[in-house]
Length: 122
Image 1 (cartoon, one colour):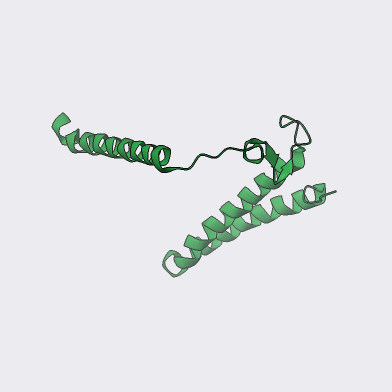
Image 2 (tube, rainbow, N blue to C red):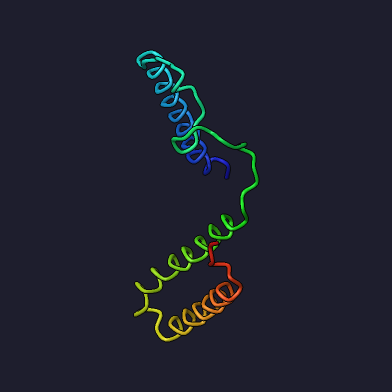
């Protein structure tokens, strides 16, 4: 039975060796062929093109995280809508009703967020 898994093991070993070989060749080529001319501008820390003016470990406002989570939520909603729209003829009325229930739940959550002011940016 273990002999049946040997091709998979061989594939993984060859893939890892090939990846390591390519990384090694790339590092070697960049070290040998790359031009290294450091100066004060290149070595200075920057933040979006400006000099750093605050501590990098400062606390972020929770609104950044909230907006990111809301974006991911609605992005996933769209990810569910595309396959549903493509297969709507095949899944029939049951698929349509199921998706409408899913969308209704998301709309209720969206209205709740809107009423709580989660989408407001001050």
